[in-house]
Image (tube, rainbow over all chains, first blue to last red; front, side, top):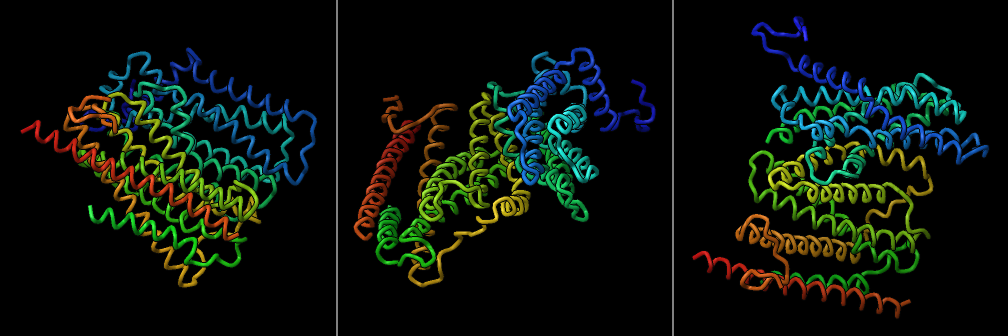
Length: 237
Length: 229
Length: 42
């Protein structure tokens, strides 16, 4: 990869260039196989249809809608994320490329690269599912700006809280539902905040400074910083 | 040994006092406030345990000292136990005082989250085969879980209060009436003492397991030759 | 109401005594194991 701009004077690469290299490599792999994207989208679409179908033509009251729909939306997003985000590391384990990865880049760079990849997946997920949800369920949103900000910062938080967990479970012997069990308690504050934020956006309550968005961003920052610090310990043997 | 006997007598005295020395608090139906003599110390021990486990995890990561991990594990086990007890006693209290077993008020929510973190911690420990990896991973998870606590402290009350305004009543501490206070503090001491006793027993067991050979498990059926019953 | 209290107190005491006896039993068991192991190593 030509990375003239990113290479320092001594010719060694920066964290960022290594991370981007890993990110691009994963993206290319994903374009070819579409494995993770398919898994996540299939889950999300299926759940969305199940929700919409089950509610059917039942008219949820205008007073309840902002909150209930926010809850449903985030349940779909969180569980779709939990179904697919572990792929970023599990596929390395399955392909036997874990060791190569450990040798090829510094731990923090590996983490960042995988984080970027997960965020890309989440971005795609939200781009497709959120409009679909709003349309299918007739979700009335008074403050689209706040809503979008909440969805984006919530997505950021989802990636931030789960990437290091994915790295741990990929190296564990019994995977299965472990990823969900471990991630969910960590994601709880984020989920609650995101639901609250979307509810407010739907209702039209415009608190200055958008506190929920800020909390989600703070959460993301904390989780990323802690992960950068802790990742090398679970990555090196 | 004498301390343990004294502790046992103390706890017995507290249990009796909770029913016959202290008065039932005003503002709670019937005698239900008495549960709080047990429920609050249990919750207190559960959170104390979590904190202890987290600190031990930090020490383990910094120094890779086996004793630190033993402490982290033992504290987590006991924390889980007391967390279950606290959830159960809290539920019973909620049913008696408010009519339903579960309400998702801030306290209940926090204790369930703690329960989930403990559960996840043990799921992780049992899923990793290699002992060194297991210890490191568990320690890392413990610290990550702790990092979410400030958010929970901020976020949970704001969210749950506004979702269920009628449940903002908080059983927190019982009234300031001196007899109640005495029993309450006495119970805190008793439960903390019980926790320390159980912790030490567990640590001794873990140490024996390592002495014997790595990976060897001792339970109450192991006889003196170290064979399983 | 007071008779109910006696009952609950009784249950609590039974649970506590059970636990305390079990802990003392464990304590003794562990002590014996500790002595056995340190003797073995000598």
